[in-house]
Image (cartoon, rainbow, N blue to C red; front, side, top):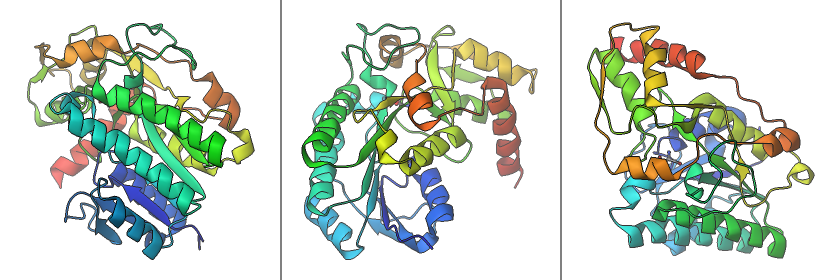
Length: 316
Ligand code: SER
């Protein structure tokens, strides 16, 4: 069995819980410690510990007690909810990340994963086929904290040799979990409404194109990046990562191939401005070149799998 001892922060989150499940398959259940700012282990599948990422002392104790060798630092406040409390979001997203970097250096952690995001892009970034190296002018505190985090990751790698790896996730869609507080959340909510036979009120406009990815591709990308030889990794800020791009109108058409009478109405809110500041599609050729990234799901393949799995959940 694996000699790696893995810590996941934010393990109850949209990605964290799916990642914890997959990592337990790879490394063995007892070698993957899930933590979150909740006394409830959502997976109900120990080992699990309560951890507030702001509590650096407790974070250190956990790393020490469990002899952690790898960290997946998933704890963060997302783009839309981050705007309600910018200072708290900065502290959780940025100070939390800096604590992880410090601890990685102090405890000689072998590998760290840091999730970045398309929210690092801004209105000065080319909107189509966005290259890896572009001006980052994020408009949300979430984007600011993640783009600054990318720079500090690169600094720790260059200065201390910290083996930190990262991708800029697009919007992630999965049947396993609901997102919370993000601008791309509509693309998960819409499937839940469709399955329940409800009309969906979309908070983005019909033609708002954003980069997106199916959960299984996102988790596979994460694990593949963490498994590749470190000599192959040339980007220590964060890799562009892409699978598909679509609008609310296009995902609606895809759902109607399976649920023809599905109805949607559009009522854009404050999240429309956030979405409009991001890019539409991503050039991820460096991830493809350096560690062989390739997505499996396009929009229709994702829709088919989402509907199949959500139906199973709702029927059981
Ligand atoms: N899904 C995230 C959000 O919408 C983007 O990384 O905030």
